[in-house]
Image (cartoon, rainbow, N blue to C red; front, side, top):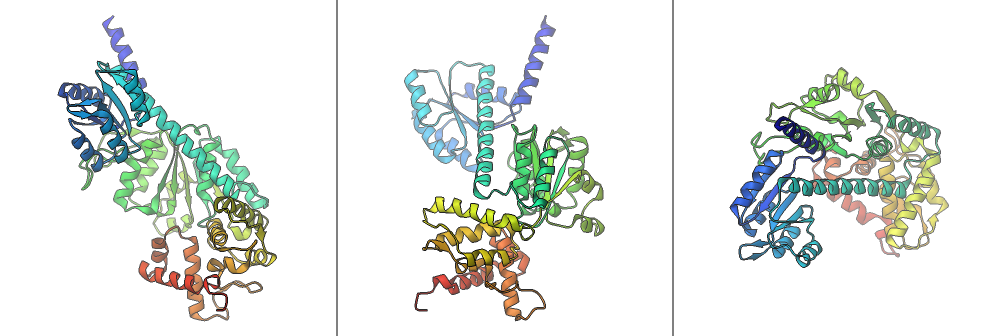
Length: 477
């Protein structure tokens, strides 16, 4: 009989660990026995626990690092727990706060809920009741992530319709993406910067059987090798300078869902074998830990780099390339989607007109001609930026070519795009190259790094262009 009881308890714990991810939890209670009992129960379930006995101690801990949840005593010595609740919510609005009290009452529960408490747990309580509360916290977090995903997807579709196409090349890409979304195959998205690779990655996830689970993005060029490895696989406390607590990492966060590796071509060579192991065996270790962990993730990746060339140059593993390249989708640049350009521009215009309240009606014929002639090196991102800016700056009923010229300059209606070797000065060519790099870069720092100049110089150059822009000059200029 005792053996059956142990088996049932083991099954319960296994079920718990499958449904609730490990959390970082703050205990705030002036009764040390309560803190001790809760710490043992929570750490036994795999959570990281920090216990304090006062509001000042709690606020210090919250300022050091974020927590997923907090258990807060309603009567904290001489302090009012509801006032502490307000302070905690102000310090970290994303933390779930559970009120615990030996003086439970309906009015105090209502007041705590109004002030932002996630749950209300009367004392004495059992470890199983704590697990149920944390289960609800985890469920709420999943729903919030799901809602964020849906809102992002809705905004993307509403803004520019990138996931619909009239041009046959893009239609073929979308058709293949939709057909492979239901599979478990790794997908590699290829194309220039700004062509909508991240949007398509999210669409693939939403159409897959994993849609109810997380979609987690890792930007490969954004961090150093050490920090990127930690962000991907997590780390244990003390693994390196600044590792003050255990961190799960993006792979664990994406368990059951999709891990999107943005700009995979920038992935350091030292991390590539670990990613290959994750793909082949679904296993990995956190930085500073020897314990092998498992993760059920589907990998979708993207790059604007030539990976075949990177393989020849020894910068990318060939075996990893073939693992990631089960299905390859090449997104065409905007200049190769002439049928989509006007439709996308009109969708942007409608969105920003509603957002700003500007009574614009359309693009002038000359503006449409200018947009068709321009090569759009920054693709969809550049188009969006150009139209958003034009809507803000235009006061008349139509967007004219001069309202688009901040990004498109020095191209004028009737002129051919500027080319290397053409009849242009070095200064004009440098300006055009700088504008195009700015248009396709998400941040000023990224553009400065590509151009090989410091950020301050680039900022001054862009500022001068803005001051020289035609619509900034007085009417008699």
